Image (cartoon, rainbow, N blue to C red; front, top):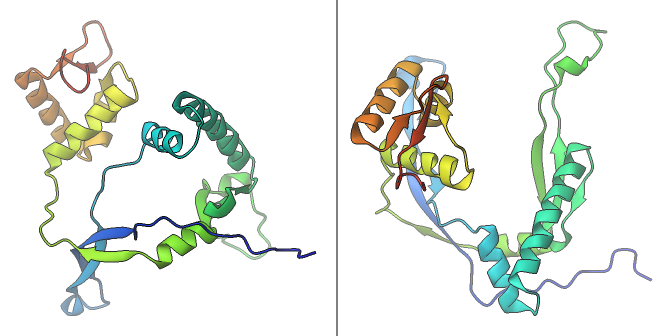
Length: 220
């Protein structure tokens, strides 16, 4: 009996394609004169695959109902998140294995004991399984030189839509809005003032600095 029998990997007919684009990266040398711009690459954003999409595709491939797939996946999310938070490795079949990597700040002196406060929040690591590795090995890379980055205003509008429509938040305070926009509190106040002037956001009366979208905006 084989202890580790080779798993049969079933791949799709279509070759996976990754659209990429060039980006400029700063090469930081020890001397200011040696600093120069270098060329790097990044993926072009694609339409995300959400739970509804996965449930619909699964329903097309087998007899399981779409609602049953979503219900099962919602339970699996809780199970996986709980296991990872408890330090367990989670094997996802041919997709791979999820685990948590924990790091700590460097100790200052020899013999110093590690404390819980020295630990940093763990990061999630995915070790590719045979299916994912096989798909990555057959990827076709395509350069998209026509892609244009969305403006800051577009990105912020998308972030606000996700915050209110997807996450179902009722309101947002200025500190959170500043974090969401990526600006300091002064610039964030100016942006919110512009949103209010445009009529897409409004101040919540009798609140502690909360704002909310007006009807018909950001998924409301």
